[in-house]
Image (cartoon, rainbow, N blue to C red; front, side):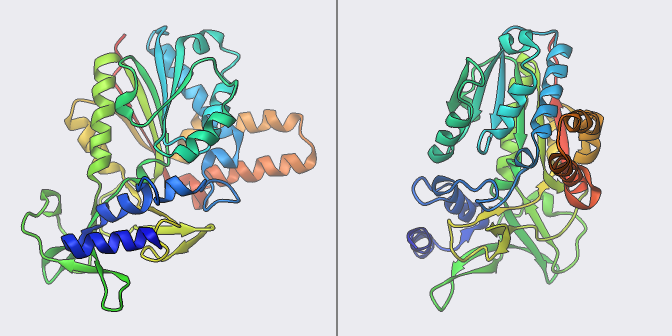
Length: 349
């Protein structure tokens, strides 16, 4: 495959490749990257996200946005931002669910942050007519300098990580190299400069994962919130404790796959370090709510009440579908506890 050959050439020319560099090429290469080639969402894609499971998810996030907007004092020029908006399903449901609050709709301009041209086209089609002001941009830095309401669902898990493994009492970095048979494989390498975060209690063969891009993005979001006011809602699968384990994974056709095979054809993610992000936000003067489980968050917003209202006008088949969807979103053994929620805020009233 062209992307795999491209990566092998980079390794042969520059030496072993960090996992973060490998993920950037595999996911975001402008021509062959996973998100440039595929529409990965839904039953016909590689995975299903919460907005694709039930319309209630996006509707409840709309409830959260309106609540925060009112706490901000109902400002009249607000950027409603979604980063990594998938097929646009979440934003479509959010806007439809808040349409009965015209003052809110009049106050917002929607900004969709998306790097994939393929997904942009899908989003533009799905959001046609959803709001009079929807624009697309390639990076969060392109969002106008104004108060923001930001939503990021299953974004941070796709940001590139680096991995470190403790062996013989010392930390080594896990990298990607070209194997003797010409394929790709992982290898451990000694480090000259060791990240400070690795100076924690750990045992041999423990993994530690660091995602520099997540902290950089949190810093950018916080800077806007602290300057202009607003809040950011981050929802993703991850952990709310310090842990030492390998969470790097690839998914294709709703099944786990080999990370180093079929590069560019499968999604590659890692669990989000919510503890590290929260600590970083607090150290940089941000207000933080959470870390909550998705189950607690959605139940607090009234998911069961909304489901009951939908079922009033549903047939038996539809009622069953609503119940299954809600169970998948909040059941502790499904998405309920695996997914976490964190809110960044700094209201400027």
